View 1: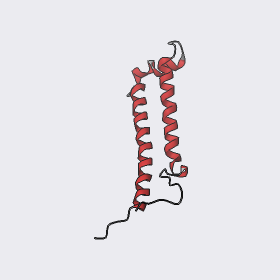
View 2 (view 1 turned 90 degrees about the horizontal axis):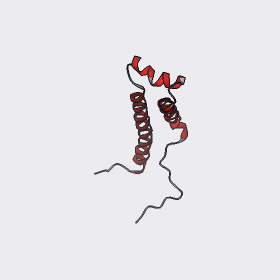
View 3 (view 1 turned 60 degrees about the horizontal axis):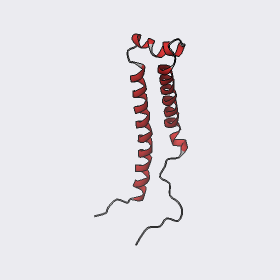
View 4 (view 1 turned 60 degrees about the vertical axis):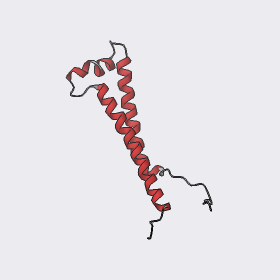
Amino acid sequence: MTYRPAGSVSFAPPITERWATIAYVAFAAAICAVIVWGQNAPSNTWIFRYVVEGDTHRLISSTNCAIVLLVSAAAALTSSTMAQLVDEMSRWVSPSTT
């Protein structure tokens, strides 16, 4: 005996529950793009001076900031997706009654 659902079943969370995560991922990607742009810009531009030369006065470098942002954005995206998946799967699996 196999289970055949009547329609298509989607395990992805709705966009209304993921908007904050998507906004954070977009923010992190924008900041990382600016950091990469600044590191590759000519040395006489303001963005190069702010990103590269300004690192001498910062507690954390721009490269480390970009790495932390990218890893945390990936973790937030994975976490929001997995939380919804676990919630959906728990509805399909009934607890054993032994």
